[in-house]
Length: 138
Image (cartoon, rainbow, N blue to C red; front, side, top):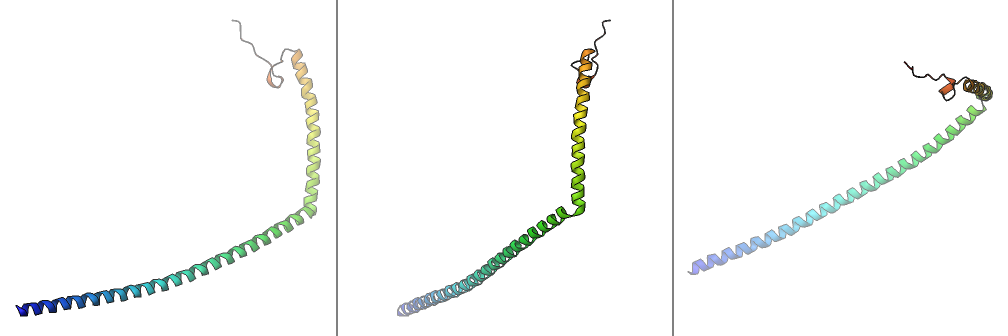
């Protein structure tokens, strides 16, 4: 029996040693994983900062280009308005608008006379001075 007790004691010591070795290995593994995670986090943070810097630089460039575009548009509009062809076209359009107003006045004068004469001949109440048709009394 003493031999069994001794073997049992040895097995218990071996199990304890294995458990402590496994715990130490687990702690070392966790420590290594923690270091790797910290390194990856640092790399990710530096990439994020770099991407944010690139984004800010792109936004500044875009703002500068938009300013340049606005300035060029203003220059082109100024050149167009100052050009002889544009000024001549504006003058022609002004004359044509005046002619259209005059023609409308003259036309309204004639349309007024036509409506009065249609009213005397019994055509009142019809659109555009037309003749109103009556039903046949068959």
